[in-house]
Image (cartoon, rainbow, N blue to C red; front, top):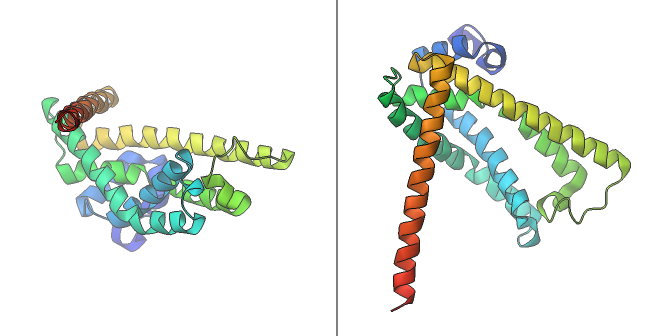
Length: 214
């Protein structure tokens, strides 16, 4: 990888997002997209499984297995859909990036998510199947476990914030925007996405209501 780009993007992205994403998109906008999708997808699916306490309904290893298998596809879908809204609204602001460059920006800004993969492995090792149940409400913690969980959550928060910082900078680079304009691009895309989501949800609700009233 270092031979291809002249540096290691997995490390360089943390501190020089603009330089990194420029070299990546100039080389290949799809560079390592599968691996980045898998990393994001795995963390996202495990987090959702924990939030919905899927471990109370399904076997622990089944949830873990499906998370691993579905992760690349789920990550790819999230990257692709979110990039579409960013690309679409970015055009209104005279953004210069192509769609694949926008997707590369969001994918590579999530490179630090690999830290969350390690953190999740630690959580699964320490708390096992309980982490995917009604956690932490029904879990009895020792003092050491409380400290451990606090440190894990703190690390996840730091990583999440840094991913946002990296994404704003990466998007700024590919779109040829200022930082402020890149943030505006993201905010407009979020508003449009929410509006579309609620419109689809409302249409679905009205259709189902009409079907049930027959």
